[in-house]
Picture (cartoon, rainbow, N blue to C red):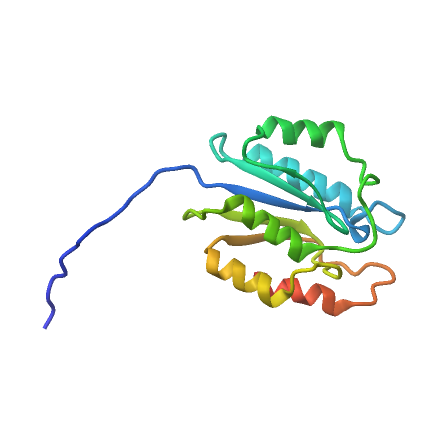
Length: 175
């Protein structure tokens, strides 16, 4: 027997969804004779910024062997665009190690308190080898938050890559 359910309450919102971009500037993304990943990452960020609706709040977490710089929601999207246009050749930050999990946690902190529709977009090759945060704790925090994680993933091997499991840790979180 089917009985109609009584609705006690419903909340609706039309607020713009917030996006935090995690930009990998670690050594494996650096410009060298083997890789053009950094230039492609710059283009991906510029394209994302151009295609997102104007009312979508955007923040940026730049990371390499540490979280290097944060453009939070109080800064304008034009500040990020100016940094991207004037800025980085890739040489400023590109260092050997990568703190992808720490950057993910930093991005989540910018979104706290979490709202439906919040998203992280990681522009990375997926390498992780230097974070203080573990895969397990990062994954648990991400799941608890309800924030969606999308990636622009450069999945090519890099010369001298000795830790393929370092890439697998992040891939497992985004699958």
